[in-house]
Image 1 (cartoon, rainbow, N blue to C red):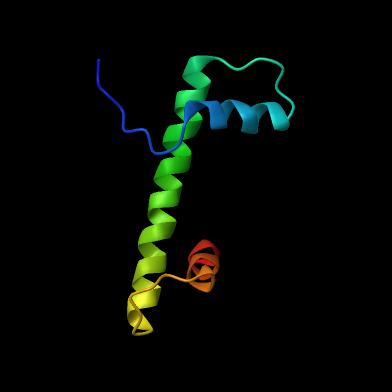
Image 2 (cartoon, rainbow, N blue to C red):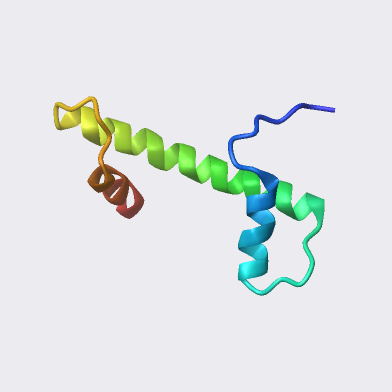
Length: 71
C-alpha cells in the first residue's frame, strides 16, 4: 500500500460532496476528489508563484492566485 501525503484531509472531501448533495460518499470517491483537487491546487500554486516572482515579489498574494485561476 502506498502512503499518501495528507495535504487535504479526506473528511474535508466528504464534507464538500455532502454539501453538493451526496447522501453517502465512498472512501474511493474521497481519495479520487482529493487527488484531483491537490493536483489542480498544485498547478494553480505553481503559476501564482511564477506571477509573484515576475512582479519582483517573494510573497504570493491573492491576486496572483486569482490570475493563475483565470490562466
